[in-house]
Length: 203
Image (cartoon, rainbow, N blue to C red; front, side):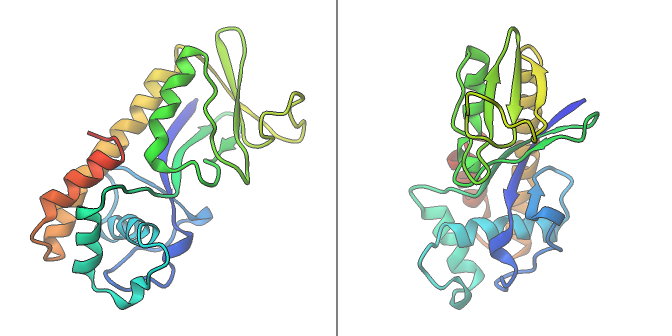
């Protein structure tokens, strides 16, 4: 069985202290869903806070300043994307660097025969076959796939349901953001959830 999850990279938050965060996941990829504990929602929000304050000292800013920057930002981005895992073979394709969670909807173009750029280091890529696709974890679209890598293979008709399942995870995660921010004492909690829903194309 193939599963597609929405994930965030958490490398940047190990020293974050503006609000409580959870234990960082193995592999530093946090799966977003409605099952996250409040501390893990805090981890996801810490990633957004740091990643969208590039070049600024987030350690010197309080929770309110960081959250309000996200509310008022003209654009929000985040490291991560969609992770593909085959439970039968154990093969996993993680999002590449610079793909970004905000571009997750580009997976929908695969149904029309396109092969969106999925990041680099690693460089996952999509090979179109007859009514099927192979999703390679690395190799950058080489003409000859790297034999040392195991791809995930699915049919084209399966893909919409798998991407929709990842979208559902994002919606369920978004439902947690407002109550998390309210518990933190943020008076603009609803605006925060709305901004995240808009910038990450969840709503």
